[in-house]
Length: 173
Image (cartoon, rainbow, N blue to C red; front, side, top):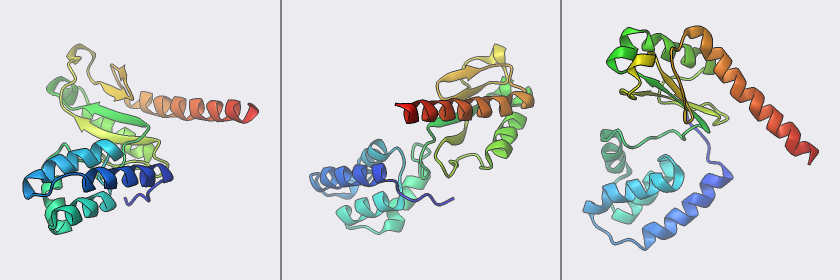
């Protein structure tokens, strides 16, 4: 899913451009520059990959090849409410895969993607250390144990309702 840059992304790209320009050149700096870009933007859009490639005088495909090799780099913007579904052994055997599929279905995105409004993203994670509560999902920083498919819709709905409430209160001000 291709995401267009927001005004905030463009502002971060301008700052990143200045940081990259101030950096020395050299192929050995490829990963540090990618890390810098991801820290600035939260992910690596095409524009950031091109910026790094131009600075290091390498091809964009070479930069993408390195970035896609390491799982620390992401190519989709993180959602404001990231969903992380545990796939550790305990969660996996207690239905973690079903929980993940329910989030994907409810949010209409796949694991590794972000909703068009950037409200949610879904990620599969290794053990989060709460095996007694399996299966487990994190929504933002909040841990939800003993997850069931029926809980997924309620969690998503709660976030959307809280957002609408905040927008109504902001409009009154």
